[in-house]
Amino acid sequence: LPPWLNMARSLLGTSLFKKPPPDMFLKKFMLGQDGSRPLVESLLDCMKSVQPAVLAQRLNTIVSLDAARQLRECKAPILYLLGTQDQAVADRGWKAIEKVRPDVALVELDAPHMIMQTRPKEVLKAIDLFVAELEKNREKLFAESA
Image (cartoon, rainbow, N blue to C red; front, side, top):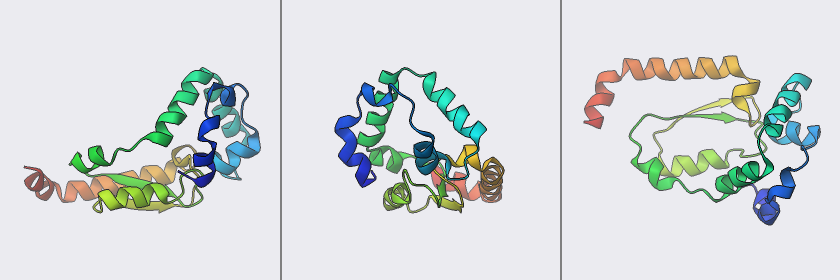
């Protein structure tokens, strides 16, 4: 967790989500400073479509989740897309995953937290390259997982 979010855990109740967050918050932590007005509006519309109690529960689940065991047990190849401008998770998420699964493929993109929404073409290219590499090594991968 980022230190500010860890300290704010007690505030993660439903009341936190009764009003939409300010645009500057969404840009700083989710969409990047160049987040377009339509993208900000789209994110706000999505947030408004979910009950505040559900948003609070989702955030509480995220901040308390430890999936190290499940990650260790997962035998599938994994691609981690890291937004170098990510202010919400930054590289802490990557560092935690890398400790458990050093074989995870990392692709860094000049992007904020909502990397798929803000850099869809770059994300698609990274996924395509990852899948192509898996295809090249298909027989080796299946032999290792057997």
